[in-house]
Length: 571
Image 1 (cartoon, rainbow, N blue to C red):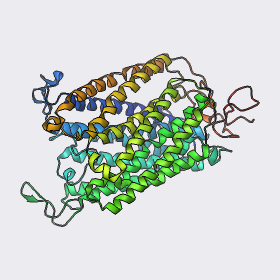
Image 2: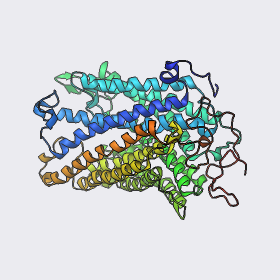
Image 3: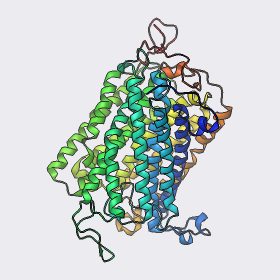
């Protein structure tokens, strides 16, 4: 195990099959931003059907593929769209953006290392991720289309579908293997390669968050991988791990011995609820990094923030069955999961109040990263508070399969994770590429995204309380929902505008990549180690290994001329 390797020779070794953690992080960045765009396009098709059920798509009238005869979306294609939208966003965009991009790029720089502990394993983790995308999307071109069982792929439905569902299973297995490889690297790097003086409680919060996330990944992802292998066997070899005894499909018995469909739900959610924290803990770390920089104050309650991350991770493994309150669970068992879910709000609240404490009476600079960070805090609070309703067993029996849950998860994953991603990209863009992004266009993108996001997502709570079910092709078949068409059309128009509002970000990103103002080493006057080297950093990151003398958030230090004290500078 080493923290450095030879300088790359040739184009392929330097930019394609690179072992440099920075190049791999940027590879993840461009790949995942592309998938984020694709996931958004799939969402726009879903919103068209919800806004104008049964109306033909104008640009599909003459193309008329199998899913759009006469330009009208068929129900099976709608199932395919919402399944692949969620799968693309979760497995190919949000998780790899937060963990693959920021984990790969930042961990060695922030702890003063030259590279990851296992550079070659790091490279392989990316090149397992790429075929996973190809396999999942190839389902669109196969007979029967892509996966249609929802991103949860509940058995027995998911065992009885065509080759597109098999592609989904194999793809997620590839993604899981890539995640495990990355997690092994993160844990080994943080434990073994910290610079002299970088004690555990001098680590930046972003590194703590990624470290705990990697441990969650190592504990939870093998469970999902095992469940996916069993699901694959049920789908291809006729085993009955999840198929109930005597199940008949097209007049043929599918299972002779008794399997348990609920077993899939337990195995899936034992991974997927901790996966929610895989999607939010790194964003929490990013926000904890940005707020002190632009409030010019030390992070309030550093130690309690670290323990809160640990508490969230530990409790995250104890609450998975709150996704299954409607499955016929014993009320006593449901109450225990309800109580543990309520308790997880405590460390989340600690983090929220510590962020507010950091902002209190700070010398706040409303830069683009800071605006996204503040939006994260605000939207995450809404997502967390609405989650409490879903955690109450009696309330969840009514809300579970309604748009209330769709609104909740989008406030957590868009209002939370994606605002955290935007904050992180705009904050570390100067370090990655050596140039500043344009602040004016960054703020325009933020304002449009913030307003339009709420216009799309907040009405979902109203629709959910009104009883509008999720994953329904045509809600007009429900008589009591005839009056919600206007609200759905408004949400769809706002969604199309929200998608368009990402154009300023895309243009700003690529214009700044080539024409942005040179950034210098430390444009934000920040204290952590990545800002002590060149932008972008050279191969090996540091001319010599830095020594750490302080914690990561020494701002407004009494007696100093500057209002920041870098970690590698003696007081």
